[in-house]
Structure formats: C-alpha cells, structure tokens
Image 1 (cartoon, rainbow, N blue to C red):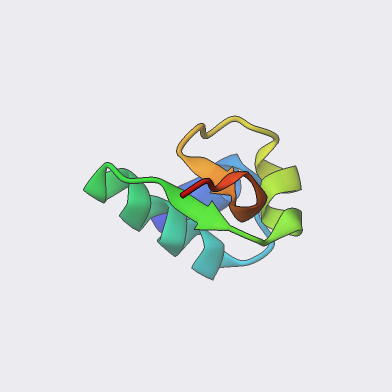
Image 2: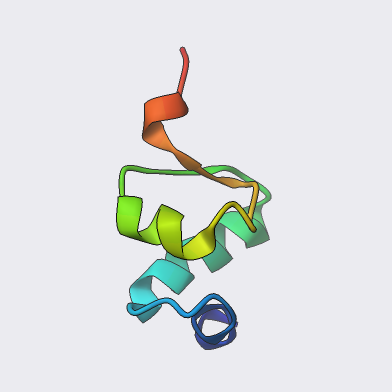
Amino acid sequence: MPQTLADEHDLPAVYDAHDIALAELLGTTLWTADQRLLRALGGRLPFVRSIAGYRT
C-alpha cells in the first residue's frame, strides 16, 4: 500500500507514504509541516493537513 501511494502521488520518499497509509488505515488526520509533501499531494487527500491550520 505505501509503495502504491508513493507512485500514485509521485512522492519522492516512501516514508511519506507510510505515514499517509497509517493515517488512512486509522481513519485519522495526518498533520504535517512538510510543505513539499503538501504540495505533492495538492489537496487530493483531505485527511493530510498543514499544521499551520491546526486550531486548539
């Protein structure tokens, strides 16, 4: 699954796909400060969000 995610979203690092796959499997939000990852996804995975948008 992670390699498929990495290929589908043209991610340069498979470890990003592992994080995404785990969040998807757990049904949770993946908060990240990784702008490169967010740009690569281009909003296609709504559960992956920028930490800049996190509100307590």
